[in-house]
Image 1 (cartoon, rainbow, N blue to C red):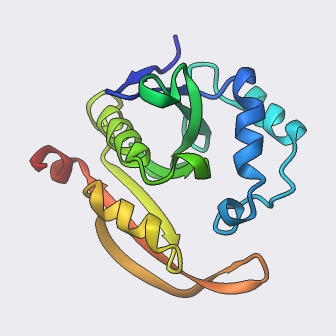
Image 2: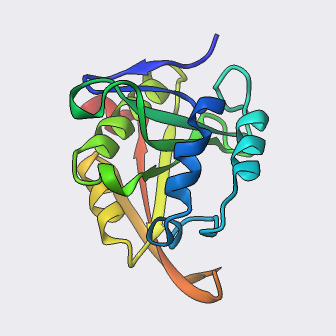
Length: 186
């Protein structure tokens, strides 16, 4: 059985082969790829390999990642249009610890999908998977994602000043986290 989360406007479940064209299309946008681990020449073969390598259950084990597709289920984006994804990684050395990342297709920015999806994934990790800690980090120049992390309730843990050699330059990372006890208090 695979993960399927449902919010008022989204179905969230592992990416599948039907998602590949839309997934590749937004990963190829230079402004989207700028702060991400891939380049704007992301290919269909890259996406197919990512989908094939995902855990069958949709639940990452320590050291694994899963890309959960965000599919719009209502409104103008109907039916089941892939609007983005949330990456979920299970920490290889810290039990019950997860890292998240989020990417949206440019046409779907500014609609609240990323916050809706992150809240659902965080709730699932905490309530269903027994997460102790969820972390996210972002390039300090990516002010939109930093604001998003705050909006979904993550606490700023620190700045890693010029601590990441990324795409040919030293970059500063901002790290955010949420502990299970903090989530319970929200």
